[in-house]
Length: 313
Length: 272
Image (cartoon, rainbow over all chains, first blue to last red; front, side):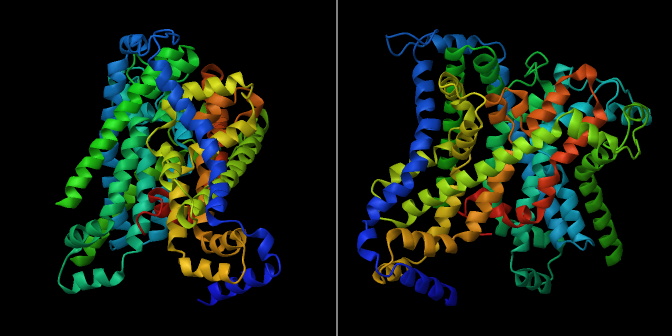
């Protein structure tokens, strides 16, 4: 209260005598403030997005006048690896949602509520992967996965297991290897958020539960989870979205042959990248972009519907 | 009995933590090793600080760090200024059509960059703005703006309207109300926006990779990927040293990140 009174006084004194000249209506002032960001957003996102949608319906070369022409979609659906890309994105997203927030929640509860010494150190250890960017984590793991010199095969060899696995070269292993990098990097992000959330819970809640005779597991399910449920929902959403479009991992692991081997790590963004940016095939890439947008729209719309159901019930 | 259980839980927690921390600690060790040692043993202990010198100078990581600092700081500042202004306009002025403005500004939440990048890149290229850092900075500021905008709006909404009205009655201009009263009250959100704007662009690969094709302009993730791309001349220890260099700002910002992560992802929609 004291602070606001002081601010109040400053505003008063510094504008003494200029009040007439500077008075513009609040609505005009708001417009002036909102316009820079709005104009830039229209240039950077809205117009490119609408153009992409328009081009995708303008035929295989993007120049048909008879609108709409679905030629570009015909090509897009024939793009090698398309269905694999869609499936990979969904698999990736589902695994990300299932694993990252769950492991992070258990870890955060153990660190924050468990009878564990060295909480500050533990928080930093859990955060470590997030010190690297997702792309750099990919580069590091591409070294770990190297079939002849990589750490993974070295360690397997040291305990007498087969040590010549082509982690990124074998189509049946590459996607899993890439998802592991993603989970390793994103679980710490969920941990960061959840441990902060748990720390903000009123300690008295825990004390009360303990006095009632609740053990650690019981407290986890009946105090911690209800309190962080909202945050968990947001994290699940973030993990789903980032999991669907985890381009940096794949780029770092497989560039310049993005999506290799034989489309095993292909996702829609890598197809858009190789068709539109590396290949210069704008109409097909535009159609692929619209497919991605539609997929996002359907999934986000579905989630919103389900949530409305739940909150109403 | 009880303490035995505690010990077991502690050990388990540390093992779990090690799963996450070990690869980074290993990279830290390997960044001081030699390539020949790396090929022979899983625990390549050495003290070759020359890798860092080699990374900084020969592999141009020093240049990339400078580039990244320039791009990340500028993006954080521009994004935060734009977001603060827009958030105040939507939350606290008599702006008309505010739903439309809000819809446009938060479109990035439903349309990921990959859905419009092809056309955006076309536009950038035809305007001759490839390899133009200012273009990258403006684009990044907009691409990342949605969440900070929501966070700032949540803060401005909590500012009581009577406080602003009192200042108006006392003769403050609209600008004075915004700048001297609302902005100081939203300071925590502004700092969060600056920090996360910096971190997101420091770590971003995609936008720089698309817009900056001139190696002298590369940001640090791009630079490290380009080290990896020359697989045949691969200097592993140098790449690891470069990766460790890239973590320095994150280590410096660790405390603030830990404190602010919650509001940064939920856009202030959930307290805590």
